[in-house]
Structure formats: structure tokens, C-alpha cells
Image (cartoon, rainbow, N blue to C red; front, side, top):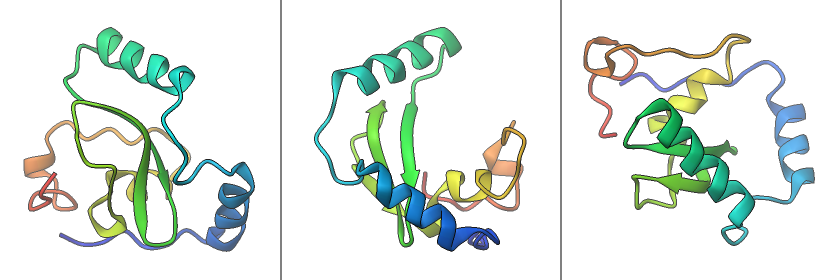
Length: 103
């Protein structure tokens, strides 16, 4: 599984992320409500509100996953932040970026 590269604006992105002061905070109903709504509207078993910091993907809110975080190398979102359009992966098992991803 190839890890995603870092975006050109990584330092700026990390500074902004730190300024939000969300990393490693307690669960909040407002985020959980949105995550549950997304899972229900999209009819999917898993929905995550994730933040990608320097070394990991951390979940502020999650439905259908027990893990609080994953290594950045496993993060689908580490690929998503590299583009301006939504990342759509129709079949992760046939996508070279994700085929052997444990998630």
C-alpha cells in the first residue's frame, strides 16, 4: 500500500489544524450528530469525522469503527487532502492505493 505524499501546503495545513484545537478532545454531540446523519443518509455502515495530522488520522467522531485513530499511512483521508475534488473510491480492493489497506 503506497502511503500518500504530503501536500505542498502541509506546514500551513498543520498550523491551521493545530489552531482549531480539536485534536485529542472529547467526543461532542454536535459532531456525533452529523456523523450519524451522514451514515444514515448515505446508507453506509461507517462514517468518520477525521483529522489528518503529521503522523496519524484521528477521529473526532465515528460510526461503525472502534479505533480512535489510524496511522497516516493507512488513511484514505491522507489521499483526499491531496486533491480539490471529493475522493471517490468505488472499490478499495481494486484500487492500487488501498487494495492491501487493513481498513
